[in-house]
Length: 439
Image 1 (cartoon, rainbow, N blue to C red):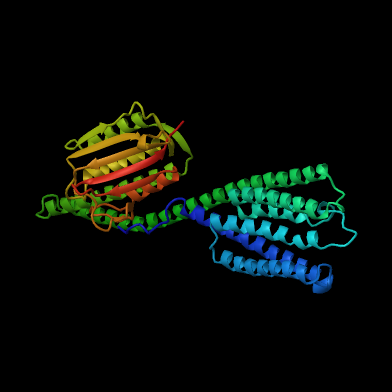
Image 2 (tube, rainbow, N blue to C red):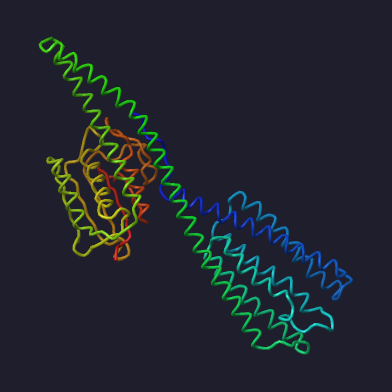
């Protein structure tokens, strides 16, 4: 049977799509920033440049701010197109927006004409509002809130400087100032809401796309395996015809044994399809709280019936660990536990465990997560089956596909948890599953 193709871990595609969308938003915002700074520079030059009010001192303030801002914005566009922006860089870019928008107003406060009536009487402070709202395009709630707070703080600093330098010219009062601050804060709240909503929509669409790709991949694998299954059925049918024609022949035993082998491979094929289907169905559902103790005992009893020669021991304070959140609910958790217990009992396909211990407890004394641990005295994980503590696919079993532990890992990560697999120095195998605790 063909091996399963490598697949991305659940959640990776969604996060990658979100990162792409955030970088696209950053590229757009940086492009708009270049245009804005270019217009400010053009206005400054149109008003006379170094010959305008403020002269050379104003130019030493205005030109470096605008030039550095344009250069950094160009670099930001290039970095965003290369998908280099993570949350920290998105926040840093938001801070750059706020600093540039307010620094460009410094020359206006220090050098102005006799018609000057105060900063809030000019259209320039509207730039702070635009900067706050544009932060939503980055799809980063932290950047939206940091941008809002920074713009409020910088605007407050500019207003204080305006009162200090231009008290004789100012015609606005506290009411206008409070109104501006409320407006900036309101726009920040709207930007954060838009950011959260857009982010959720992107993740939802990415999750749908991820499930579609996974379904397409598994359908392709199923179709390829279907060809092998038809070959096995044709072989079994041919041998059955030979048995009918030669019921007492010397080849009867050989044909019967071959039919049994073909049927055994077909049974393994059906088992693999069932395992994948159960994992896919579980991951298609939402996470819900599950009674860990009940599900664990039921799964252990079912596996014990199948492997009567293995001693399965369920231990730990199950009564105190009541519920965990798992994608697929109780069937999802049952799939995880059953797969881990069966893997422990089967071992590498040649040598299995004699004793399997299952324990569950709150991780590190906290009640926010539940730790499920399965340990056995079998042969452990063979080289190449793990990448660090994560399963990488592959199998040592004659009828295995290597998909079981990968599906379990995917279901656990889709639930917001993690899976760690290892072969302890003392021998055997150990798998630890960390799941969020349920309400």
